[in-house]
Image (tube, rainbow, N blue to C red; front, side, top):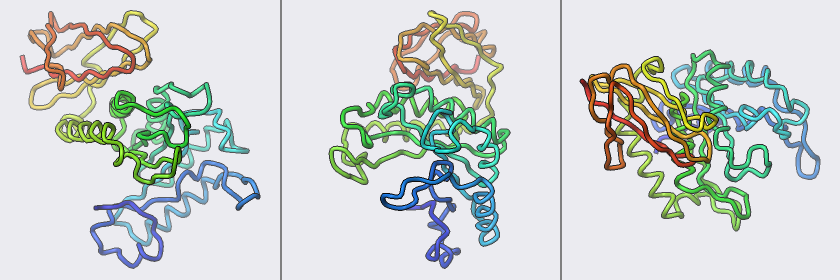
Length: 307
């Protein structure tokens, strides 16, 4: 199994090992840092230190990229876990300079704060902000919750996970990190693998993403489509790609409410039907326009053949 790992003593002795595909910083340097058992927390690691560490890792091994995973302050400015740097999103403009791949994590389903709890769209917001802060010049990854983590009652469903995954991809994420640990009701460092329903769902997701990789890796073409929703205050996000003369439109409801979405695709003026991938159904297309119903957090993936 290939790994992304610390550039520690073991890693530095294995620079010729193809198992190591990338290096990583310590997790979440943007959060307040522990001062030791019973001693509380100090400030986050300064961005300048993260950048200096990155430059040192690159000097030791310029052949591999360096991953930086940041905390939920990327998506939520009020995250108190940043300590004295809470509500200072400007820090991230500096943090992102300290890596080749930039990632973050936020887990809305299992979140304990009402402002974030069950608001899956925070995942998409964090992806958008990292793309903005990097100027779109670096790959952005993000973490996906797959277990109850430490929540005594809440646990994401396969429907939640699929929504978070496609929100991420539609908004520009280039890599997914599945959070598999769980502390409640007992510690299990591979809880996803011990959950048959979730394991099967994530497996299906990965297979579908792998199948669609040539499409997802094609240039984004947002100008080719537009969407209106009813009710208008329930947004539906979408991404458009073209591959082998076909047009693909990937869409996700961004709220936990039903909504009808009306899509118009410029390249589909002569297309009569859109296939809904993985759902064993098709939708009639008239003059490049079609309508579909989304329940809360639904994902629909459309394939429009060449005209």
